[in-house]
Image (tube, rainbow, N blue to C red; front, side, top):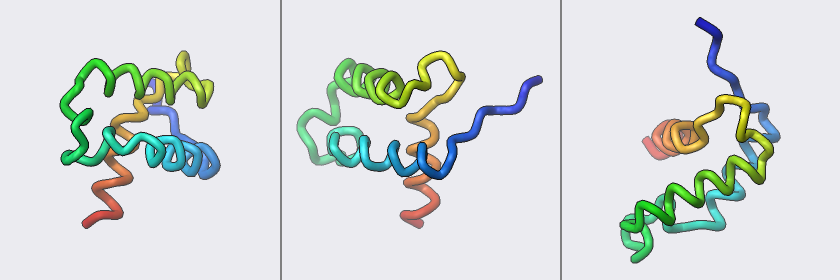
Length: 72
Protein backbone atom coordinates (compact mmCIF):
# COMPACT_ATOMS: atom_id res chain seq x y z
CA UNK A 1 0.00 0.00 0.00
CA UNK A 2 1.31 3.44 -0.91
CA UNK A 3 2.01 5.86 1.95
CA UNK A 4 -0.51 8.63 2.59
CA UNK A 5 0.54 11.94 1.05
CA UNK A 6 1.66 14.64 3.47
CA UNK A 7 1.18 18.38 3.32
CA UNK A 8 4.22 20.61 3.53
CA UNK A 9 4.38 23.23 6.28
CA UNK A 10 3.43 25.91 3.76
CA UNK A 11 0.45 23.86 2.55
CA UNK A 12 -0.68 23.28 6.13
CA UNK A 13 -0.52 27.02 6.82
CA UNK A 14 -2.48 27.71 3.63
CA UNK A 15 -5.11 25.15 4.69
CA UNK A 16 -5.48 26.85 8.08
CA UNK A 17 -5.87 30.27 6.43
CA UNK A 18 -8.47 29.01 3.97
CA UNK A 19 -10.51 27.19 6.61
CA UNK A 20 -10.43 30.19 8.94
CA UNK A 21 -12.13 32.21 6.18
CA UNK A 22 -15.09 29.79 6.34
CA UNK A 23 -16.24 29.61 9.99
CA UNK A 24 -19.16 27.33 9.14
CA UNK A 25 -16.62 24.54 8.59
CA UNK A 26 -15.70 24.47 12.28
CA UNK A 27 -18.12 26.66 14.27
CA UNK A 28 -21.11 24.57 15.32
CA UNK A 29 -23.03 27.74 16.23
CA UNK A 30 -22.83 29.04 12.66
CA UNK A 31 -26.22 28.58 10.94
CA UNK A 32 -24.53 27.18 7.80
CA UNK A 33 -22.70 24.48 9.78
CA UNK A 34 -25.66 22.13 9.25
CA UNK A 35 -25.63 22.55 5.45
CA UNK A 36 -23.87 19.36 4.36
CA UNK A 37 -23.88 20.34 0.69
CA UNK A 38 -22.25 23.69 1.40
CA UNK A 39 -19.66 22.02 3.62
CA UNK A 40 -18.80 19.37 1.00
CA UNK A 41 -18.59 21.98 -1.77
CA UNK A 42 -16.34 24.17 0.35
CA UNK A 43 -13.92 21.30 1.09
CA UNK A 44 -13.82 20.54 -2.62
CA UNK A 45 -13.17 24.21 -3.44
CA UNK A 46 -10.35 24.39 -0.87
CA UNK A 47 -8.79 21.21 -2.29
CA UNK A 48 -8.99 22.67 -5.81
CA UNK A 49 -7.64 26.07 -4.73
CA UNK A 50 -4.63 24.35 -3.19
CA UNK A 51 -4.10 22.32 -6.38
CA UNK A 52 -4.50 18.99 -4.57
CA UNK A 53 -7.56 17.58 -6.31
CA UNK A 54 -5.82 14.57 -7.86
CA UNK A 55 -3.16 14.07 -5.21
CA UNK A 56 -5.07 11.86 -2.74
CA UNK A 57 -5.36 14.42 0.05
CA UNK A 58 -8.32 14.48 2.40
CA UNK A 59 -8.13 18.03 3.72
CA UNK A 60 -11.18 17.62 5.93
CA UNK A 61 -9.39 14.84 7.83
CA UNK A 62 -6.19 16.92 7.96
CA UNK A 63 -8.15 19.85 9.42
CA UNK A 64 -9.78 17.58 12.01
CA UNK A 65 -6.37 16.22 12.98
CA UNK A 66 -4.92 19.73 13.36
CA UNK A 67 -7.92 20.93 15.33
CA UNK A 68 -7.94 17.92 17.64
CA UNK A 69 -4.19 18.14 18.22
CA UNK A 70 -4.07 21.84 19.05
CA UNK A 71 -7.41 22.19 20.85
CA UNK A 72 -6.70 19.49 23.46
